[in-house]
Length: 155
Image (cartoon, rainbow, N blue to C red):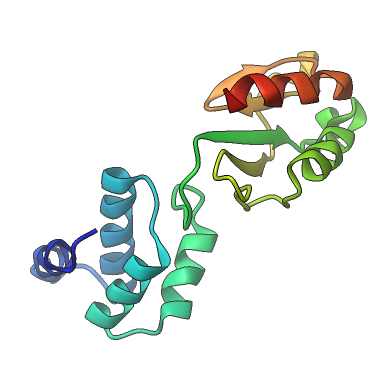
Protein backbone atom coordinates (compact mmCIF):
# COMPACT_ATOMS: atom_id res chain seq x y z
CA UNK A 1 0.00 0.00 0.00
CA UNK A 2 1.34 3.40 -0.98
CA UNK A 3 2.65 5.62 1.84
CA UNK A 4 0.69 8.59 0.46
CA UNK A 5 -2.54 6.60 0.86
CA UNK A 6 -1.54 5.70 4.43
CA UNK A 7 -0.86 9.37 5.14
CA UNK A 8 -4.28 10.23 3.74
CA UNK A 9 -5.93 7.60 5.96
CA UNK A 10 -4.05 8.90 8.99
CA UNK A 11 -5.06 12.50 8.25
CA UNK A 12 -8.67 11.43 7.77
CA UNK A 13 -8.93 9.58 11.08
CA UNK A 14 -6.85 12.16 12.97
CA UNK A 15 -9.51 14.77 12.18
CA UNK A 16 -11.96 12.83 14.35
CA UNK A 17 -10.85 14.19 17.72
CA UNK A 18 -13.15 11.78 19.56
CA UNK A 19 -10.85 8.85 18.68
CA UNK A 20 -8.13 7.80 21.10
CA UNK A 21 -4.76 6.88 19.62
CA UNK A 22 -5.60 3.17 19.85
CA UNK A 23 -8.97 3.72 18.17
CA UNK A 24 -7.29 5.70 15.40
CA UNK A 25 -4.78 2.90 14.80
CA UNK A 26 -7.53 0.25 14.83
CA UNK A 27 -9.61 2.30 12.38
CA UNK A 28 -6.62 2.63 10.03
CA UNK A 29 -5.72 -1.05 10.27
CA UNK A 30 -9.33 -2.10 9.68
CA UNK A 31 -9.57 0.09 6.57
CA UNK A 32 -6.25 -1.31 5.28
CA UNK A 33 -7.46 -4.87 5.96
CA UNK A 34 -10.69 -4.18 4.05
CA UNK A 35 -8.77 -2.72 1.11
CA UNK A 36 -5.78 -5.03 0.78
CA UNK A 37 -6.85 -8.14 2.71
CA UNK A 38 -4.01 -8.04 5.25
CA UNK A 39 -1.63 -5.62 6.99
CA UNK A 40 1.96 -6.29 5.86
CA UNK A 41 5.01 -5.59 8.03
CA UNK A 42 5.92 -2.63 5.81
CA UNK A 43 2.46 -1.15 6.33
CA UNK A 44 2.70 -1.83 10.07
CA UNK A 45 5.99 0.10 10.13
CA UNK A 46 4.43 3.06 8.34
CA UNK A 47 1.33 3.08 10.58
CA UNK A 48 3.64 3.01 13.61
CA UNK A 49 5.70 5.90 12.23
CA UNK A 50 2.64 8.00 11.43
CA UNK A 51 1.02 7.44 14.81
CA UNK A 52 4.20 7.73 16.88
CA UNK A 53 4.16 4.24 18.37
CA UNK A 54 6.54 1.33 17.91
CA UNK A 55 5.74 -1.44 15.43
CA UNK A 56 5.39 -3.94 18.26
CA UNK A 57 2.36 -2.02 19.49
CA UNK A 58 0.77 -2.15 16.04
CA UNK A 59 1.63 -5.86 15.73
CA UNK A 60 0.04 -6.53 19.14
CA UNK A 61 -3.18 -4.86 18.03
CA UNK A 62 -3.24 -7.03 14.90
CA UNK A 63 -2.56 -10.18 16.91
CA UNK A 64 -5.35 -9.44 19.40
CA UNK A 65 -8.07 -8.48 16.92
CA UNK A 66 -9.28 -11.54 15.00
CA UNK A 67 -10.46 -9.55 11.97
CA UNK A 68 -6.92 -8.25 11.32
CA UNK A 69 -4.23 -10.35 9.64
CA UNK A 70 -0.52 -9.71 9.14
CA UNK A 71 -0.19 -12.05 6.17
CA UNK A 72 -2.11 -12.77 3.00
CA UNK A 73 -3.97 -16.09 2.74
CA UNK A 74 -6.58 -17.68 0.49
CA UNK A 75 -8.56 -19.82 2.93
CA UNK A 76 -9.27 -19.48 6.63
CA UNK A 77 -9.85 -22.69 8.57
CA UNK A 78 -11.43 -22.32 12.01
CA UNK A 79 -11.70 -25.30 14.37
CA UNK A 80 -14.39 -25.31 17.05
CA UNK A 81 -12.83 -25.74 20.48
CA UNK A 82 -15.99 -25.70 22.60
CA UNK A 83 -16.25 -28.46 25.20
CA UNK A 84 -18.80 -30.39 23.14
CA UNK A 85 -16.73 -30.33 19.96
CA UNK A 86 -13.61 -31.23 21.95
CA UNK A 87 -15.45 -34.23 23.39
CA UNK A 88 -16.38 -35.31 19.86
CA UNK A 89 -12.83 -35.04 18.53
CA UNK A 90 -12.32 -31.33 17.91
CA UNK A 91 -8.98 -31.29 19.73
CA UNK A 92 -7.73 -34.15 17.56
CA UNK A 93 -8.83 -32.28 14.42
CA UNK A 94 -6.89 -29.22 15.53
CA UNK A 95 -3.76 -31.28 16.27
CA UNK A 96 -3.98 -33.03 12.88
CA UNK A 97 -4.47 -29.73 11.02
CA UNK A 98 -1.47 -28.25 12.84
CA UNK A 99 0.58 -31.26 11.77
CA UNK A 100 -0.63 -31.26 8.15
CA UNK A 101 -0.28 -27.50 7.70
CA UNK A 102 2.85 -27.17 9.87
CA UNK A 103 1.42 -24.12 11.64
CA UNK A 104 -0.26 -23.19 14.92
CA UNK A 105 -3.52 -21.28 15.35
CA UNK A 106 -3.14 -17.67 14.23
CA UNK A 107 -0.49 -18.54 11.65
CA UNK A 108 -0.49 -18.69 7.85
CA UNK A 109 1.10 -21.55 5.89
CA UNK A 110 4.37 -20.78 4.11
CA UNK A 111 2.63 -20.96 0.73
CA UNK A 112 0.05 -18.39 1.88
CA UNK A 113 -2.89 -20.70 1.23
CA UNK A 114 -4.23 -21.34 4.74
CA UNK A 115 -4.77 -19.37 7.93
CA UNK A 116 -5.55 -21.64 10.89
CA UNK A 117 -7.65 -20.33 13.78
CA UNK A 118 -9.85 -21.59 16.56
CA UNK A 119 -13.35 -20.51 17.49
CA UNK A 120 -14.98 -21.19 20.83
CA UNK A 121 -18.40 -22.25 19.59
CA UNK A 122 -20.02 -22.44 16.17
CA UNK A 123 -23.46 -23.16 17.69
CA UNK A 124 -23.73 -26.45 15.83
CA UNK A 125 -22.86 -28.74 18.73
CA UNK A 126 -25.16 -31.62 17.80
CA UNK A 127 -23.21 -32.14 14.59
CA UNK A 128 -19.66 -31.73 15.92
CA UNK A 129 -16.83 -31.75 15.63
CA UNK A 130 -17.14 -28.70 13.41
CA UNK A 131 -14.72 -26.70 11.34
CA UNK A 132 -15.44 -23.56 9.39
CA UNK A 133 -13.70 -22.89 6.08
CA UNK A 134 -14.13 -19.41 4.66
CA UNK A 135 -17.28 -18.98 6.74
CA UNK A 136 -18.93 -22.29 5.75
CA UNK A 137 -19.45 -24.85 8.53
CA UNK A 138 -18.42 -28.46 7.89
CA UNK A 139 -20.14 -30.87 10.30
CA UNK A 140 -19.00 -34.14 11.85
CA UNK A 141 -15.55 -33.79 10.32
CA UNK A 142 -13.33 -36.85 10.61
CA UNK A 143 -9.53 -36.75 10.72
CA UNK A 144 -9.42 -39.03 7.68
CA UNK A 145 -11.22 -36.35 5.62
CA UNK A 146 -8.69 -33.59 6.28
CA UNK A 147 -5.97 -34.42 3.70
CA UNK A 148 -8.49 -34.63 0.86
CA UNK A 149 -10.28 -31.46 1.99
CA UNK A 150 -7.01 -29.51 2.15
CA UNK A 151 -5.92 -30.79 -1.26
CA UNK A 152 -9.23 -29.71 -2.79
CA UNK A 153 -8.81 -26.21 -1.32
CA UNK A 154 -5.23 -25.88 -2.59
CA UNK A 155 -6.45 -26.05 -6.20
